[in-house]
Length: 484
Image (cartoon, rainbow, N blue to C red; front, side, top):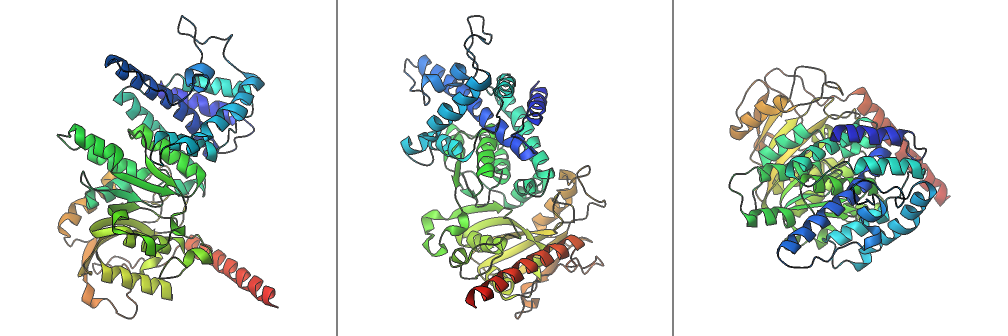
């Protein structure tokens, strides 16, 4: 039933002039899902309070509750067509009254980790793009078919929502920023092995896939106490996200997975000064796939000891700084990081090897990330002691991967098993840190067991670099002209 409802919603959105892509479909479905979820949450809390002879203070005033404006119902429990807004009346209410009212919660909230603050953030960042009130009425009726009350319902909805995020990732280059293959994330979580009581962080959280998978991993632990569940809900998962759409999707994704007030901040992580990070800010576990290929402004680069425009290199510095001593990380990065000869890359590899134990490098095949031609590796490291030995694993599923044949859990099973003992195999080997060139700190993937050296770049990577160099050249020329 849920799957059909999602399909019906997308069918209506395709007719809507204001929605042009999978990104728009997911965004518009998200804010409506959020309000439907909020209505169910408030009703449940009111019922619980009633059982204890207490009165529940509703977050939303009566006119702005789902049951009042979206689906007013008659005594028979069916939609009251005399009271239900539609057409221009519905669109005008949403745009002129509902969104401004909800945005106002940001000012009223007692703090950024409250549900009220999240409501204000979400409705200050997105706009209603469903311009036809008749289409909006049809979508609302489909959304109202969905139920969030039982764990089974939430579980099914979270799977469907993940599928929407995946479709968005497959739809094009921008959408791909929000989607890391879940099988890769699960493997990373299993290697890092977070435990209850540890704080887990992703400073470039996109759709919050890493935090959701880590939550599922910890929630499945046997013998969880009420105290454990409260810790998972309130003091375990932390994220930051710069882009408005990703922020909204991250909040909704975590809510559907079962975290009611996610600790996700809408901010540019890289704009924070590394020197101001204190012990109380540091995390036990970091899991992330920071954006690469981006360019940060000069004033942002000033926040980092190793100055570079490459976004992923700035994030890696941030992650190293954000880890507690003894903290563990799994970070996806472009494979050229291992061998680039520019000063920033060499300095960053030196920093990583000297301040952390880089114990594992997972070399991912082309096609791991759909819609992106770049090859990637996953760096697993612990902070506090220098690297003694690096264990490499060259992932080779034995097939070309694409949208119809993506990476799966079975592809990563051998890696997870061998990583426990860091055993040698035809696909895995170890490199002693003493043998790493102290002039270049080159960490290239060179399989001594006859596998190919995989630092060679794909045509897409070469084209991306040419584009980046062209942009840099244009910037230099513009600066020169400005000086003349």
